[in-house]
Image 1: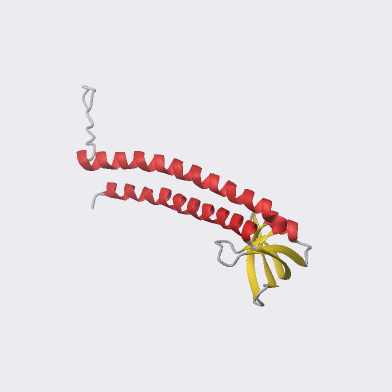
Image 2: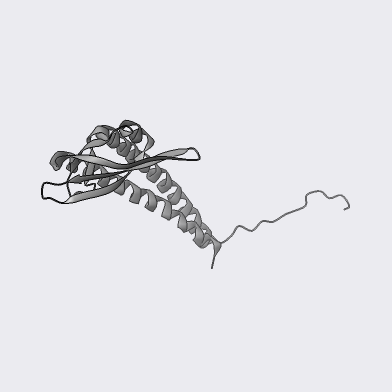
Length: 164
């Protein structure tokens, strides 16, 4: 197998960014749908933890609340450090809940921050997609050219005529 076929693997990068961007779009619309159409509840904080691993800080919160249908919902939600700071001291958190949404639980105290984080993620994914798409196009052109024409042969010619 020719080594230039491996260059086509670069198409995995734009595919990854496209997948990530799609996930962020679904997350954004799920947050919006839950906020607009969901029911309001007050959730009890069961556990809260913030972890710092190297230069990255994140955490989680485990909440529990009862729906109007009598169902008890217990859920663990991931929290970036910005959101964790907002709800750190809270024992109860106002939420919106919509069971059939892509993101069924939205914490009202961090709703605006959550939306802005998702919008930034969408922008980063879009930029990453465009850049890797351009790189993949040029790399594919190069690979096709090398597969069609073959490797360049390098000829070394001695120009001095002196006795060697």
